[in-house]
Figure 1 (cartoon, rainbow, N blue to C red):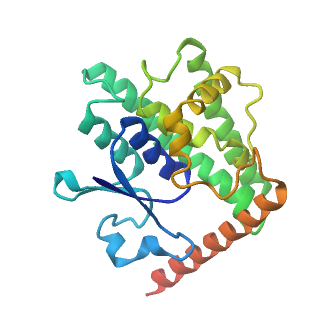
Figure 2 (cartoon, rainbow, N blue to C red):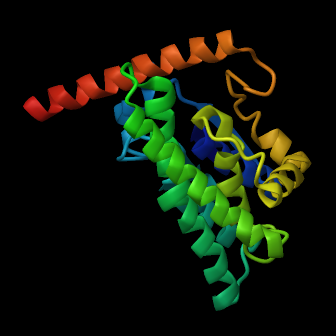
Length: 239
């Protein structure tokens, strides 16, 4: 049995999707990020960085893994699935996984902060991060023009990038002009395991179904979390 410590975020859904695809038994441990449960001493013993997700593999003596990309690699290597075993095939998957970890995730995360959460609208920051998101989306679109998936067969690289790309509207970035990216997005979204994974746990707002009012309420709550986190860092820095 694997414990998955998570929340309804792209990084959290990366791991729940992988667990569903692999058919592994797992227990869902949803953390209330607004209440600061990710900073509890018990959780920090699992993930010293105080972020989600993290897993604990009880079949391996309670071995803990934090960082979403590391969780994906661990699960793929544990099962021998979703990543080739040969050196070059493995490298292709890891290259696109690192593309998400170092590019798509951080840039979309910053776009979310300045476009949705930050109390003051700073046009230069919004344009900067939305523009970089769109550039990275174009990279994916060009690659997917010649490839069904990112690194050969469907893999953890697709899972990692898809979990973020699916939320592009929350970052304020449209992909109507990127047909190959949209084809890939829709194909992965149709997978039953993916559909189960994004409900573990379910997001509180879905821009494809919920109205602007629901999105605004969610953004206000997230904004308070951002402000609380900034205050905590200030206090810690002064300690």
